[in-house]
Image 1 (tube, one colour):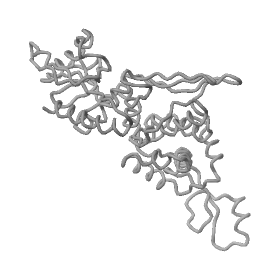
Image 2 (image 1 turned 60 degrees about the horizontal axis):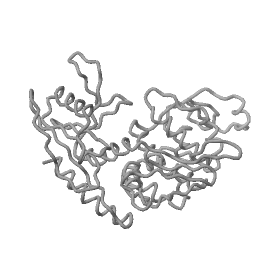
Image 3 (image 1 turned 135 degrees about the vertical axis):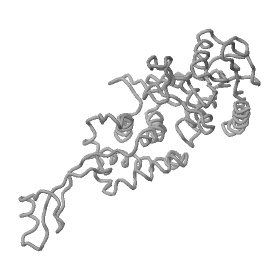
Length: 354
């Protein structure tokens, strides 16, 4: 799902729940996943609109990076005071302290949060503040507000006139075994500050756009509903939350969501009238068997009202296998859609907890 444009030709790839060209469901999932408070994303394909979308990606990447902690690295500082705590810079000392009045020019190498990477993020934040939607982008949630404040607090040496030099210092990608998420954040900040836009091509023909995997969007959207309920969302990218098929380890697997004796599989498929695919069925049953789970559930989006449907009780260790649909409502505008889907979300979480 998403949109692509080539010069003056544009194509919008909508979700199957879009009506009359208005894909409220796609926009709603994007705002939930990326922690935005902006609902007027336009399917226009000029440079400015595509560039704006980069700004909408910033809060999510900032949160992902800060989940690993503030980026900290060594940085060289120059001082000229009476508290000598590093090697003396003789040339600078002679230049700045003649006649001698008790100060010494010296250099230090300190492990600090105030470094080129966090400075780049700070310059991006200040840039977004000047955007018409900047206030909404940086205040979409308490988590984003806290993240922005952390960056501001950690960059006391920020100076808006240093932007180009900070960009130049970040031309080399961040490669760090722990701060892995900062690579994507750094690249996004450079694109925003350089106003590159989401584009491909050169000279006359320009291709603009962004496409999302519908299955990924659905899974990450469900995570915004299930995570507050205590469900874990294993990540195969980092290996977090994985389970093993054998007692001695090995053969790692990543169920979509796990909590106690309940395993949930997110499927962006039409499951109301058609049965569950045999591979999907075998997959979740395998997870239930290994974890001795008493509940296994497939959650999917639906365009009609559905109730929790129990498929059956498994043999062996037992366990209830069911499927549950989330109604994607029809609406006249995005505000109407949000009100209706919020009610459906409450019903979904009620059936899961039941």
